[in-house]
View 1: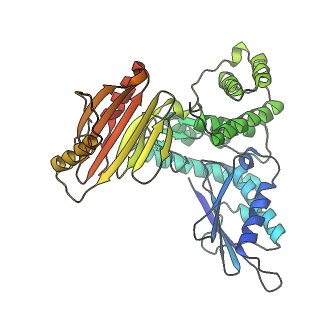
View 2 (view 1 turned 120 degrees about the horizontal axis):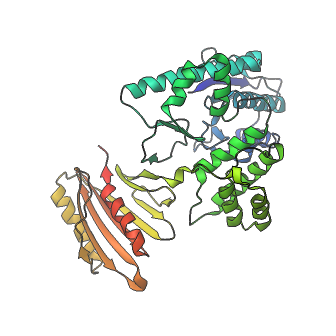
View 3 (view 1 turned 135 degrees about the horizontal axis):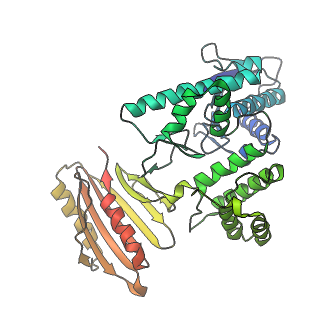
Length: 431
């Protein structure tokens, strides 16, 4: 449910027209100076290669704001929607701050105006009603699509999020949503819709209260927990931000249903024993975890390259060295994959070439396994052998029309063999 509008501001002759670098630095500085806020805390920005566009994102699931500078005019594209009225108000307030700092005035595009009217009116109650009505329309659209045979709707998820291999109606960064929730919302009274919408939207009110901090860190847990076994510094920083958001929420309301066990795990992982003891002391019998939180608990279908895909646990780290080489890692399993492309469509010829690539190394491939990709579009051959220190390696050769895949699965313990075998069976290629 996108709420999109365009703004622009011109630096006229009364002002010094800044160069692009200074302008973008001033914008980022203004955004970073916003009062402490979980969205600012996890924000990221980048500049498109041509250098004329600044992209600023406040949340992994939020559409970024685009700042484009051409000649003497700054153009801004804003998209809100599934984050709620509070987020929409926050974005407009941030743009007001930028306008004051740069001594400019933003004007709406004549065609693409703020559909909520908030940029002009600053009427927050009207803005809340607009978002509730928009959610009702969105709910009706989802129900219609589902009745027409579609499902597994992803609501404002990160653009590169893998496709979770699980039947569900819809998911957002706050978890899974059943069809009944949306039908209940459609049938609800205006007063009840306001209550339900407050659960659905990340930020539904004007102030940054306990629930806003709570839902912000819950959304981060859904996206990033359980932590990967081979963790990097960027992800470790994210866990620190999760704990900070928890602390801010707890200060404001200690009675919310905090995921105590997960918070204890994260505190221990960050080597913060004092925080772990604090959380342990606050955990009570009626605060026990009742839900598994974290999309990474699931399996997902990952894109490899050139149309090849594979189903793996979402907890694995993914490394793409170039367009044709990809690695998946955790402590117990390492997978390397290389993709080849051909002009030839004859699968037998392609498979022969791939097997020769394996033989070039001159090493024993091991025992041939009775394991194949279950895709009808792929021919596959699988070998396994034992290495030193009880490690095992499974070599996989796959051939399809104009494409081939070589993969090596290395596992350290027999209990992870089944995971590798199931992953091999899941290899597929998109049309």
